[in-house]
Length: 488
Image 1 (cartoon, rainbow, N blue to C red):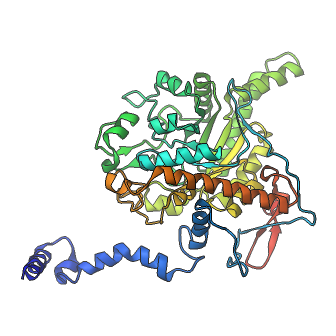
Image 2 (spheres, rainbow, N blue to C red):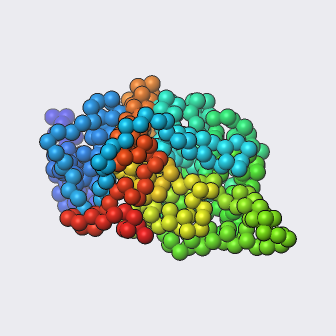
Image 3 (tube, helix red, strand yellow):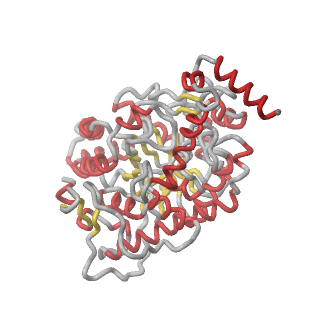
């Protein structure tokens, strides 16, 4: 009787409301439409999509990450299920694979700074802000980074206590809103920045100009994710949406960008880079050409060739970024308009080779390290990027999978079922940081192990020595072209 009465109430409510046509025309029954729409993603993921066809990450790639994180075998039997498509990579194995057990060469960022950063790892954790992801997720990521000897990027939300005290190498990201190092009016607070730089775990600083999730638009953190702790860390009101401006207020030209890089480096005394998603490669070339022009102009006043060269090198050392983090278009972990996710910014397969070419053409490749991120979660992805010209690779979503992400696509709704991208403490309780940090570390370690396998198969002793001569790129599903030719 109570059930029938309840159904009658729902029937009358549906019939009388005027906001949803389906429910008004089909009381009770119409509710199933919204239910199926909500759970449809899970049915497609587990029952209907093949291993290699799901988007944005297929089951085969996610499964590799899950197995690596759980320290299960990543071996596969009975041949490949991957169908070669345009743009896919084919590594050129050597007749004489390399058996050297040499240590990986050190990658040095900011050798001209008072506190350069060196690492022998090429795979790291990309920017994910505390707020966008939960405190247990941050703790697990920091702990895993410490165990694996890799860096973790703070994301634009600033460095939390977990970042600063977790023992991992940290890259502090300065977003357009300058969270964590800002005055109340949003301008840079140099005292706060210097205080952050004094923490020995903070090894580098990254100025975010744009990101692949939403090129041309600032960060978006919904109001229900802005807790008191997050509000305090970011320096914003609690319970109000955190929406960053699309650009830095005082960076309006190439010259002001390099002046800002110089300013941050002078304050922090540590390597400083920029993060961007490239839309126009000619604009990117113009940006770096303006730096060359500045150095050429300032050195032209010297009296002899030797002095001019010294002055030129000094200007480049003072104003060039120590690294560029290249993000690929087509979305990321953050919430963003579909128009930007689907159709703004160059994807990494297009932008990475072009950016690497520009750096080489301008003789800046040795001075500016190239880091890239954007849907690179398997050893094939990462090794391709190293061949194409990257010095290091970062990923956010790969490490989210290592935490247990099931690609529920609820990242912006505060209802993440795995407790990763939610500030709901009930859902966070399911994520045990002490357990998940082991999986984060295991994923990174297995990644480096398989990268070494690929490198040695190609006849080189380290993933850092992979180059375009070690790979081909498919131009259709049957023909492949040498990477050195395809990426001219």
